Length: 120
Image (cartoon, rainbow, N blue to C red; front, side):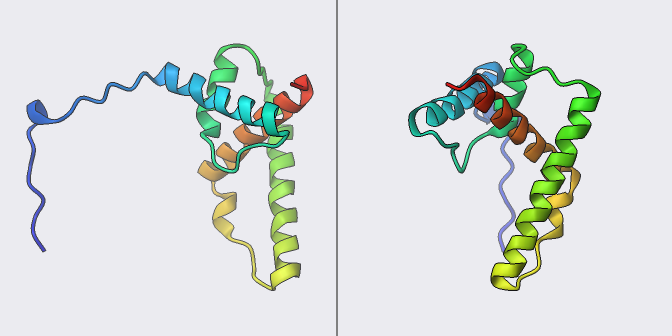
C-alpha cells in the first residue's frame, strides 16, 4: 500500500461553494419536485433546505414544536421498523435512532409539514 502524497495548501484547489446559495438550491429543488410531481424527492439535502427555510422565516419552531416533531419522527421510524419486521422478518436498524439521523429526519419532517401546509 502506497502512502498518499502530501499536497501543500498553496497547491490545493479552493472550495468556492457559497453555502447560502447551496441551501437555497436545496430548498428550491425539493419545492419544485413536490410542486410538479405531488411527491417529495427520495434523495435531497433536507438539512440545508430546512436551514434555508428557517433562516428565511418560513419555518418557525418553538421548543415545544421541536419536541412534538421529535416524537412524531420517532413514531414514524418505529412504525416503519415494525412494518418491515412484519413484512420481511428483518429487525430494524438501531442507527435510525442516533442523534444525527434523528436530527435530519426531524428537519425533513418539518419541511414536509411546511410544504404540505402551504399547498403549492
